[in-house]
Image (cartoon, rainbow, N blue to C red; front, side, top):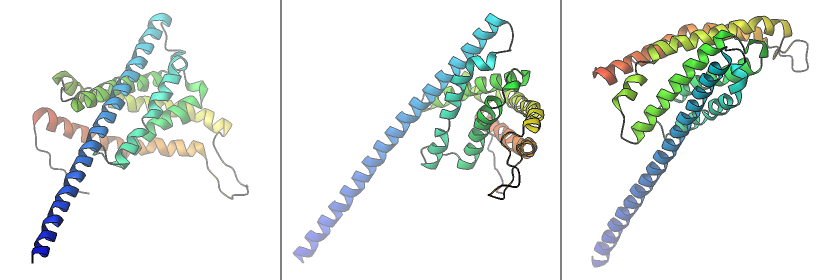
Length: 249
């Protein structure tokens, strides 16, 4: 009996120790995740601020948007591509955001930067490029600063207000810029056949980049309203304290 009681005591102590160790490990992981996310958001805020300053300086010096993209493209490519880490953040669970939603948002930006504006040089001076560049820049400065201050538990009301108000204008302007830029690229893509695969070939597959771009443009019709109205619901919830009940699909 004595032996049995001793075993039970040791077992309980062992379980308590394991639970304490697990809790400590979770706290360390939580601290590391918070520290990393804080660093990441500060870096991204700074990066987009650098882009904003570069664009303003360019326009003040040149008085035109022509050549703007070429002057800021390296910084834009670096920070927009760096945003791929946000998909990783979702996959490993350190941010409570849908992998699908984040993946669509980030990949669409990567697509616009690398497969449209970078690859099709004749469209780099289109005014529509300025539209989405300005929209992206203001949006990202606001978004990343919002996340940074939230992680630090010192969120100024203006940043919160800007996060949930600026998008009302910036999202439609950005989408218009993206669509108009893709539209401007269509004649060049059709003429050159870039990124297209023609039959016959040894893989017996074909791909037409021109029609892919048309499909991409059409996809904005169902996707944009979903994101936009989701942000409007979040705005009512955050700024006005409304309880939003979303129906499951």
